Length: 283
Image 1 (cartoon, one colour):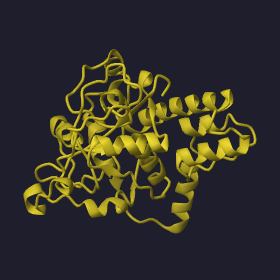
Image 2 (cartoon, helix red, strand yellow):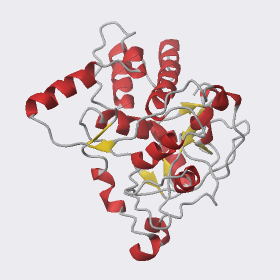
Image 3 (cartoon, rainbow, N blue to C red):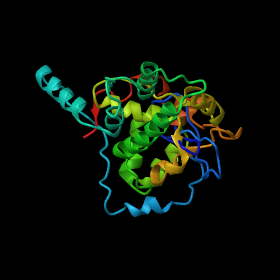
């Protein structure tokens, strides 16, 4: 994030919905002049920015991962090859660094830090080259989020995809229900982007869910997994959290964190978080 970063969170363990997560929380209104905000959902729906409605008629609906039947090894190799070779905003970003061999099967930040090491760009007193590259990466992540989840704030399929990404087993069929669930989850959006991107290539990656905004803030700032606040519009802009100044009252109501029984909470299966979305692909 150029201004400073924003964090997003998604999804709740609500009613009879099953959330395969480890942590979550509620929405928060738009941040006024925040320095940093991770990629996480907000509690009270903020005002929809112009960019959220500008794309209403032209933005294609994102695809929701669906379970796929097992295919032959030969067919699987061909599909994996096609996926790896299909360029994404992150592929485009890393391709601008001549001589750097980007591995799309690794996490985004691991690859960025490897790039910095190879170029000799220290994190302490970073040179202009590292700062420029970091800003470029944040922009690429914003575009990657749009490719995966879309940009429309009122797109049901976008919210359903977010529910799927955080591990909800029974995805609601209405937008209000999906948003209600997403309000209960605190998750770093850079991790969520990597999770969906890597699962598309048959790789596993865990997007940890947090019990509250404070723990999410500590993780986000410590890992450097932030997004540019001034570029977060539409759906992404609605998912921002208070990262630089986390709110003590911003806590998740998911059964895992409230101590409610499985039956009372609707069967949230937080222990299945690390096995989420196996066999799911994005079309």
